[in-house]
Length: 176
Image (cartoon, rainbow, N blue to C red; front, side):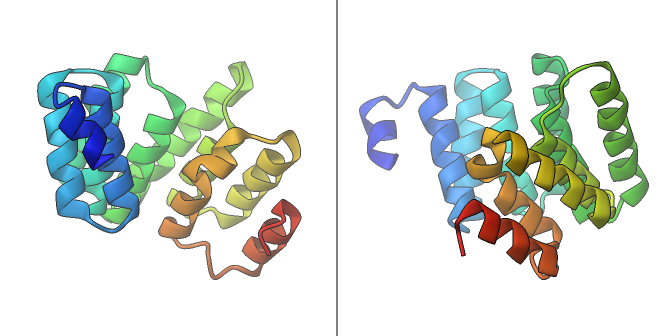
């Protein structure tokens, strides 16, 4: 991805993907730098979402929330951006705010489709592990692509990885 950024330094998407990969690799400072470059090149959902996640990993909670608010505004409150905001609040110790976002997602799911992985991440951030596992099981049953695309990692980050129900889902997914 670094090579892609070198070949096309004006690509906000390339910087955003680099930020995401650096974040997943535990290189949080590099992730923040790449995501800031993305937002400087283009004010878009993708760039601000990447900045929100990078700042969360780097424990820059105020900056993460501000970038997340921009991502929410630019996307019409995309459910994965909402779930990320709930994780930021949980990491920052603002549990009531994380719970409020989860309740908003639950209400939204009554009106239309909301990815179960987004619900699982937000339920986990809100401290409701039973609901989080209900949503994860549903995600598995319907083959929610978010389950394979990173939501599982986020659930681990919020603290469910030690729960024995994780093993059950991993076995069902064929990962154990």
